[in-house]
Length: 378
Ligand SMILES: *Cc1c(COP(=O)(O)O)cnc(C)c1O
Image: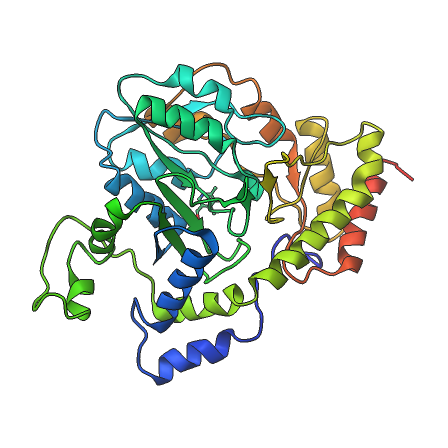
């Protein structure tokens, strides 16, 4: 494809930092660059503790362990999300309960959460789709009144805010992704954000195979041993080094992406005004990070036609999640509570356009031109 859907971010300093790790013979986890990344996230978001992980998937699994999720528990989330949001809880024996999304943001409909709560409900997992925040005040209020934990899937939400608060640092736990398809990347990686001091010690132990190795390295205990069940959730410092090069330039990457987003918005506005497509919406409480630019076609057939048209013109667009409740595993491990009014319908007409750091205006304009051609718009 001449215009790809995604190109992993690269700033130019990544190799220098990785080389430094290699030459210093410090390539395992929790080295210099992991510490720098953790510190960057803590400063940027105001969370009490950030722990770099091997993926957002693993950060969510850590949150599920820390939350004490067990067999028979129920966890509420949208069905329109990535499998990892659900897997983390299913792996602990919990049942996933889906509620419908809002068609305007594709986020969980905060007004449907309360009626899905039962005595078995333990947590709410809002997913900030496209880096646009969920209605967090409402969600936090529901959680407080029902004594539930909030675990934010902020995989797409780095550098985005809700009412001035960083996504991922509002709930009890927040999870970031640094996969190569995300705004800032280390290939495979993520982070767990802890809002309160309560979980910090256990999180550090769980991430280091259930041992107190971190305390040992700090000289706080004289030998390290098995403290509780855990796993290997810490990434190599070489990956952390790749990420740090981008975090240092986060403002530049963010504004580059926002430029693309705004250019798409402006160029496609006339098609929306004619009622041909729908464009994304950002509530006034939210500052987004241009993780994604999507349009909505009239229906599934029209979207499939557009995918075919763009692909035949050397442009790669992407559809997104197949709702989890309709998937093979979803039929076994989950339940959709309430009516699926928007989840399936909206997911079938959503199309993501090429969006990445350093996408050129020429390429973007070509994508727009082809979309206009498809709709016979001029
Ligand atoms: C990318 C993504 C994940 C998974 O992230 P990994 O780092 O690949 O594990 C989870 N949830 C959402 C919403 C995502 O977009």
